Length: 387
Image (cartoon, rainbow, N blue to C red; front, side, top):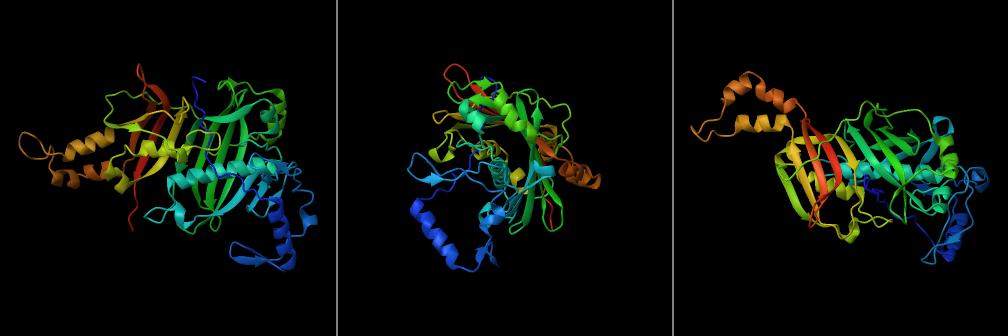
């Protein structure tokens, strides 16, 4: 797998319980007349009402000796995850609430939280499809062929950041990408007003979990996935913008970054949030304070192992350089290159402040002979709105 990194996303393991715990839980439910869900009481759901949509496999032992149930048939509604099947029976919609631990100091959701929500809804979509094996988002056919998903490209557009307590609806669906790939899209909007907060798209391919090489899509896997494919795009796919590779001459650099055990996902790979953090750490502090990220494009080249030492490179595009040079003192006469009064009076400074600022990124593994690139990226930043 020379060209694409194994960028399987990180997520919490499925909740598993012992048989005795299940029996106690059933006893408690039978003794209650109502069930509390998200702060309100609802009548208990009758088992027969879900019998056709929530069939599960017999409890299967996992390595820890505990058990988990995985649906074996398509579910139309999942009241516990607040999810349902849409788009004529192939898309998925989930209602989520922005929690206090998902926001930053400005009380809006962090980009990391948004990426985690995208990942979680994608996995829940597979869960409700009835295709989920015991792997991380892999279907039954993929498991039989030792295949796992890896993402080759992701793009996220954020128009507005949801605030703490905001109730969101996240739609996700899949479609074909070439002969052997899959495209997954997302749409995040306000449940109350329908206002669109963010859109995202991604391209996925398959990798053999044993050989670590990319694989063609086996026919049995194609037969599983094709009925779920639809032709719909959250972000219109024009000609893909080429992201140039940075070198050691990049303006900003952060070296000797090392993944920790907490950075690994269930497949023992560095998770997507860590890649993002490494990239954003090279953004100048003044930009982070005055701007917010409005778009990110990531292209994955190589997986990051637990023993890799990572270097994060960042190069600004023209606007940041021009704006800084206009305000920096001239070394020869102690004056700015252009008078601030002239700049403000002519609207030049305002023009540059309002224009998005863009950066090109590169994460690479430091090697003795040569560095190996892992992720190329591009970020766009817009000035924060002031009340």
